[in-house]
Image 1 (tube, rainbow, N blue to C red):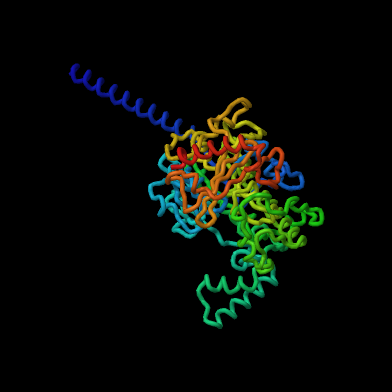
Image 2: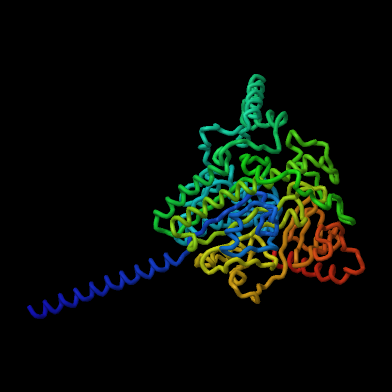
Length: 527
């Protein structure tokens, strides 16, 4: 009996030890899981740094100011390709356009580079719940589930507009007269046998498609207002899971058309709006570096005959700039609602927030509108971080890339780093140490014009561009004889890019140095 009792005692002690060890392991796992940080990921379509915290006191953007005081703003940040599809494919995979093979609005990286894994898809493998509302991808917006692989909780594109105003016409317009006319045009098209949605849309827009709208409506009468409300519902759902989470919120404005509730238009006096100071083509710049802003000319109140170098009527310029500013203030209000919700839940300071624009926007400079170029106004974006471990109220002037977001967010979130990235972690620049550097002194980007691909680097002071012909990409041999144009701009002495200095004798050494840097980057880092 004693031996049996002793044996039973040993068994009991062993079981208790195992349970204690299991409990300890569970505690460690729980601690490791709780150490992973939640991520609020805010994408804003067509947003250039026309914000009060980026040196534009004329802008009414108090919530961008609020976010900037909470963290770090990069003042020399650039996208990898100044149009939605390629830019978003790059940031969401952490890879450059020549790796995603997305250089247009039609290609889905899931088809062109099927081995790539998206940022939220990777986070799912690391124990996260991920979901989103609004525009995060471009091509994904027409794919099942808005790139369904990215979300553990399905992405949504809500359409529950404020019932006081009804659905906007073609998801854009709430002006009653515009909606009435568009309804008549739809009836007219259907009477002609035009019934498919895309054909109906085209029929109407060829006859009426305003570039701006100021309507006396609520925030929720337009898309971005209901995106915010949907995001707040998703936030509650994510918190209840008890797991670390990634919430993507993709705002559509200030993308054309510039439609926003009237109260945001009323923040600005149109007569006091300044027009672009330099509305000419840069001296010595290849003509193919410019474009004739076809995206804007598609609107019915814009003359479709405008060509490269033509200047839009000043009254229309002021209206467009006014609309762009109003849309930014509209988004600023949505940002405030998101931060208010986090603060009310007591998690504002414990949540990593990253906000970025998918590219900039020309507002008449170089007689250009829209994006689609390698110029400063098209490539430069607001890029902001806040949260645990991030310094407060700091600006960083170091040139950085939007593709750097991918490794940065993983390090900030305490997630095992993915090796799928062409970017670099910016965490060393996010503390209070002003002497910290990273191993790159330039940003980079590219843009195609037909068979020509323009590759650029942007240092603290200069931008250097080479245009390579014959459908060149960085996975092909670099050949000087393939170069059909070069550009060099000096932002200290010529911030408006009025002249291409590449052939100026005073810039010979600088051009040579930058050429070597670009060639090294293209041949070594973009394959």
